[in-house]
Image (cartoon, rainbow, N blue to C red):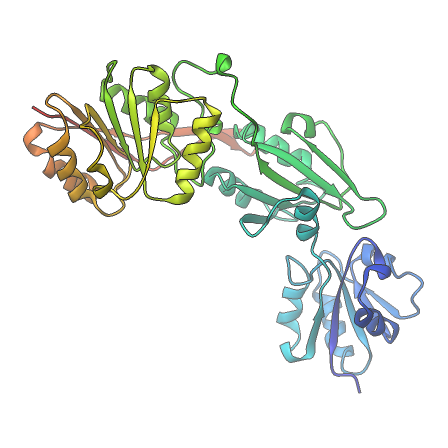
Length: 407
């Protein structure tokens, strides 16, 4: 008597794309279950058909009662355990009774067609789900994002979201339809281009970071570069509004030497360096991946007066010339020792500005700088975003900007 329930992943190319093992299982099946589309690929098969729709509870119960008495096979798109029916089957059927024979997932096919790695990508499904997870990924600034869509949250809807959140310049969109099948089609373009197009419901959207060459400097603002113009990982950037406050407090002058400690994406260093070619800026960062982002941003903005220092402060500061101004964007747990080194090396009349996300960091920094009559500014940014048919404000974390001048 049969005792296993086989779950076979199938692609848009149908039976011809299956392995010999999967074909043999299909040949002996007396019951086939799956979505309407995949069952349509085997319309000529003589087995009894059970359609699994939006509410799978009833068909799964029928399978639970049948699979020990008949040769039951569940068909699923791609990999059944990747945002597929596999999860529901594991809840309904004993694990030892399930045998999974996956096909290539649509995500694997998409990244292979785009010639991009995907071990470093974020995969999100908005198929029958709200856009919240995608919004969070866009706000984090994830490098590559793959999106599984549906009829409502389609590529045009993703494009509208990119435009609404000001991320459209950061990504180029890649849409693969019917991947692996005879009707395969690939479309790439900007969000503004994609938003005007229609696509098959069977598609995958990739959001790939824009890696254009050097930016056209004539079109760049004199101050306040948009965050989206920088290559960055996650939230490793000092936001534009904060950046302008920080640079104002640093009171930079021609010929100054500037240390940017915990440089992240290099946004503060680059914004400062663009103000005057007579400044010499040292971007100090311990993360190798962040260093790569800084160097790429320097090429994008054609900045030549920033030296990149890959090392951990305060040790890597020893060989640098004494600074006129220091920005401390991150301390990596070495706040006290970094402040001691900065206070010792900073020139008389020099300025230090530190961003403090936590009360503990602020307290320790304030205490260390207490002899220099420090000042603090509390900043709470909130940006408008769409909420249903209207708009609301979405707040960032509060930030304390601490500043002091060496006597």
